[in-house]
Image 1 (cartoon, rainbow, N blue to C red):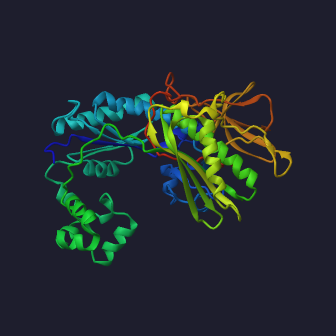
Image 2 (cartoon, rainbow, N blue to C red):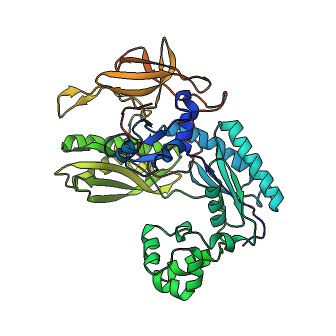
Length: 472
């Protein structure tokens, strides 16, 4: 392990929620919850004001509403978050060639590799400058941890939250870790933590006292040896600059189970097109098409088909996903559908797929869902506006959707530069003067769309919430 705290871990503070608060003056200082808004939605991020009320990420949105009924509930704006993430990652890459992104809002940096730090004083100075630059460029805050290993740098950044910096001095690691819960160590989740607790081990120091042989006996060789080393603050993992994606996938959870087989097929086609958009945006193609179906009884089925060569052709992916769906029994209803592509490559073999010739280009994804025929009901579905997303009115200017339903959409007209909350007005959902638009930058002159040529590492699946009500 190193003798200087030259590994940095950055974690943006309540990233999605903070970005929403920064872009919406009326939400600053208030509880904001970002995630799926339907009855089966899940919280992606909660602002610190919401966390005080007991709300946390991965919590069902329905439970969050009980704890924080007056919070603002918004659907994610991933394009917006990726644009901010690219700004932050650009600052990290300017410090060192060894940057290991873990998600849109989190990354390790090897400061020594870039000559940005070589001892405690230089590491602290670099961390201070980084936090200042992030605030200047994005208007947001991030917490920084500095240590001689990745494990300790991540622990330090957690201690620094929110909007702080913690440096763990080499030689103090054992004393710091000793009284901490075993859950602080990488790889110790609820199941492992409970297993250790039943053996009388609840702190890191108790792992050391138990001895390596006992830990291996309890957890097995593969996990036991590594965990014991971590308890001794031994972590020689290097910062890895490139973390190649193994797959690209998208999925949707539905508020109401889908029973109509035609609707299921249409949803699979739509998901296939979204998946291909992500593939193309990352400059990738893939050989294996994967279909995921979660049925009414929570049973989850996964089916896959491997093609003769990699493709990014929407027709090919749609056809493969449709074939996979034919082998799945959806009787009783479907609550979740997903389409993914694995076996990734940076080239295609279009000559292998003549059936895709002449396939039109994929349309851009829209935040607003235009009215489309509902084959099961024989009617047109009302155009829906997602809570929190950006709109522009020809008379009132830029705003965001505060809520919609019953043929009406409520919009608050304000921009990130405004000092006071904006005014609220309500329109018909089909008002011709109202249109969906791109987000405005948090800092004047900043970008709002990520580059299509440089993908930002992040979760392989994005859970996009349905349109709903944002209460303020």
